[in-house]
Length: 317
Image (cartoon, rainbow, N blue to C red):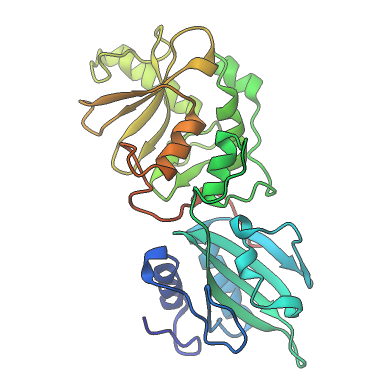
């Protein structure tokens, strides 16, 4: 793949090139810079403060909040392969700043390095790590989902007033889901599987708002769409927590008094095929991300995974 020239390319064209390169199936990454190891490619960064800011904004718009890996010459000492270390390795103590985004199994980095006559902007794409590689023994399902996506859990969490949410719904919610919602917030895994969380309903993925609308529509329309199940708050009814861009839908089956024991029910887009998964939401998501044989597998399509947050920003600093 021929590299663009930052002096000639428009930011949109450079962004499109970076996006293609970020997919792990586009071949090995070998940098042509002297002394740089394999496993990444340095690209010509946009020149000038205005062009750099425009390009950074475009990265944020496409990939969401960046992970801050280095600022004012201080690199994150806790960075690992899962959290962006491959973006730091090529530059050593010359690094001034670096932001990173995980997408398609690889890291995208935009930063700056020291030169005798001033900082030089740098742009690179670096290898990530597969979702099932090296998960520590005893890792929770949520920890597995975080590791699979490279999600930065040090970033501000999605605040939720769970007492208010559960009062409005009339039920407690599983602990693992509450933790998942706070860590990830509103957004989609691999730009495909959307997570419903309490809060903003700009994209129709507010957990509470969707539940109330579904219940009202089922009540007033007399629809049999969800058969053989009912819709929450009907006893043992379905309470939706996610969907996909192919219109697959995911629910809890709210049977019994203990939300920790609610199974996941998945439905195909024609509402004609239902599947039950006995386990938590985070276990279900981890299997979707790592098991190529799972019926809703994303691992069959992507070697690496990412989470695209809705409404997050990183335009300062």
